[in-house]
Length: 333
Picture (cartoon, rainbow, N blue to C red):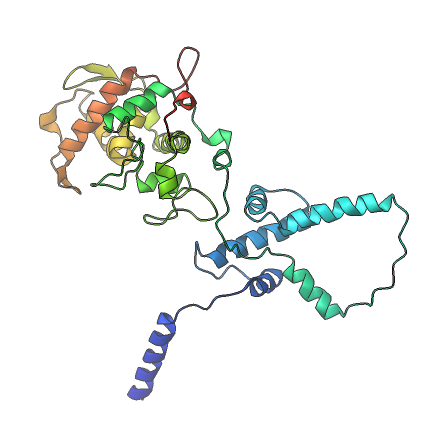
């Protein structure tokens, strides 16, 4: 009995370490048509192809365009949805013309017709990386109208004002604005902490070489940060006056975003709660000295947060009349 169980354990171990087999488009098509759930690993080519096929299938039934289907047609121009619309237009045009005399076509067997219909429900897996225009990565409502002055001050604080290709040695920060990998994941430019996104979106080298893309990414990143600040009710502190270590200043959205960019919204929240408990009087002697990752202590993080809040309290966050927008910032490629 023990030998049998050992054999079973070895069999399961062998099965778990065996490399997954490649599934062709036809197999994925049949799985989508039969209503199966997406069984492939998140982020794999098969997972993406399955998701696009499923979305195009739903679109074909509802006859309504969806954002995911638009993305599928950008990446796979010969998608089923595009073909379906082309066929419909051709059919409408043909309805106004006299029917042409053609030789009879032999009827196909029902099984073969079903198989061909299933195969046409999904585009083939891409063989090369297509290109998605930068302007189509984010929609207008995902971009904060950031001012050029705010962006420049962040770059100055990060000591990367003229260095668009900067990569940090002590963190995952990249580019002029030193956006961390977590922020790039939030805005869709990275899939995980090591992998840049698929489907034609820019990779790390393209990101570092393209100031226009970095400006757009920075605006999208700040929009996400502002959402997090709102979710944590930290924007409720805007307008609160702090008697700081160096000077008295007022909390602003620009200061909150700059501080969250420097230390994260979690530590920013800890700092603000600490100041609230101390009636908004800052005293470095009362800051906690707990050790945090990176050979630093919490009081050092608190001081960095307060510095950002103070320095950015007078910096305009939003572009407006008389305040240049971020998209006026240009740099040579």
